[in-house]
Length: 283
Image 1 (cartoon, rainbow, N blue to C red):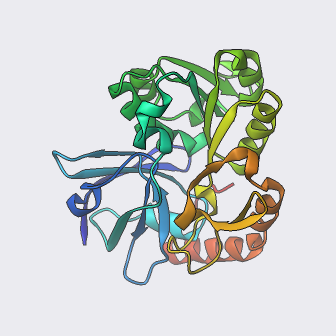
Image 2: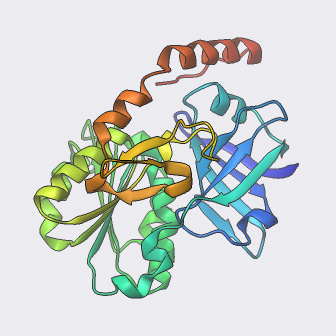
């Protein structure tokens, strides 16, 4: 069991969880993820690490309620049954910062994708990098941890679909306007956003790293749910990634596979809501 210090709603369907997990964060690095289980009979949920404090042994996670498992997770207040990790490969820039000292880097986040962006930019700031962030959401209320990212980023460009905060439109609009200032891009968020960013940066010959964490289910490579095609070859996001060269990813195949079990997921969510006696807005 892992003690929960906090599990609170911070935006529509978005939660911040803090849990004591000394054995997990001991070797944690930016870009890695953990697997959590709310209860002994719960499904495994892969969550990218948002933050960690090795002095206090606290692991911080941000997650969005999108289905039955995350809905159940949002109801847990005292202890998690399991937290496993760190898993996956760490961000390559954070692993070898000396190789990127001469690069002008921009991070692009969509929605809760800002959660894994934060620890990477924080780490790089501590290694004397000036990192810009382009952060997009549907509306102002869905922009998360603004104070945190502003404390570590050199410059932050906000974008909302409805224009309620920052630029109106999509992150690619701002990226194309600013792209002459960068020669390396890291993007984390919805698959369609990462696809569009990668297509744009390909046109301008800007190296792009994407994180395929939205695909992961079991986190061990055994379920096959996160199978992806990278440069025409099969890979698994949880084992070989979650980060890949965005210009080598077959996004069209991934987007199709993400919709295979939509109806089954919806049915399970409805059943979970009934079991919990709780309604939840889920998109």
